[in-house]
Length: 325
Image (tube, rainbow, N blue to C red; front, top):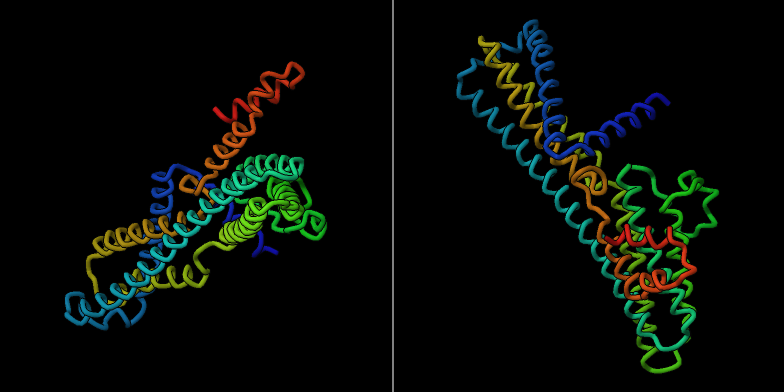
């Protein structure tokens, strides 16, 4: 129980740091690791002062330099692998997110060109408009680091604690489910509608895949925990090994350790930002979904209809205008 609470506290702390401006995020993480390096300096200096291992070699020996060079090169390879892997996954996640947005736009135009079933077509187009703003709200939910309701069918919400309260992700599940059912209920009566129906069904399937893929990248960050363990263990080895050798100038050793720790902190900051693609100041944002929603509103003529209708709710008009300006 204590371990779970500690993990949650650490997660909230990381989310808080990531929500700061990127330069501040870098400074906080770099400074934290630098302080840890300074503390390690005093611990290792005290420990090695009581061990015979510090007499293995002299500080200026060729063996010492070659040994540290090998460790440094191996750790540099590990750093490159971790950061590049995180960046590639971040870039792929952004690509999947944009593809989902593009597919929803395509589905809107494909269904809009359908000549039959006017009521069903209108319901689908309005559903896609709601889905766009719902996905925008879901991105806001992901920004806070909250767990998403991942159940495909809304009636299963009782079995998932993340779905017990109202959440944009839960509402979005219902919206997508309704769109999917309505698309499958289209009854093409002409060759042109038959072709559009096939395209619509294919797009719904693609949107479902992109949507699940995006959510997977949110719930399962790009970097596997084993890479983080290797990252930190390698850093401890790189910082700790020089203390096994003789160094009379402890202040110089302290400066060297603090500088090395700060550099490791910079890499940790990069990896942490890329490892949280939907959280923090550098996160993938859902602003495109808001623009898409406004595009749908304009295409359906709802903005003009609301403004021209004397019985329209003025609050709805103002809310719609505020979100699309």
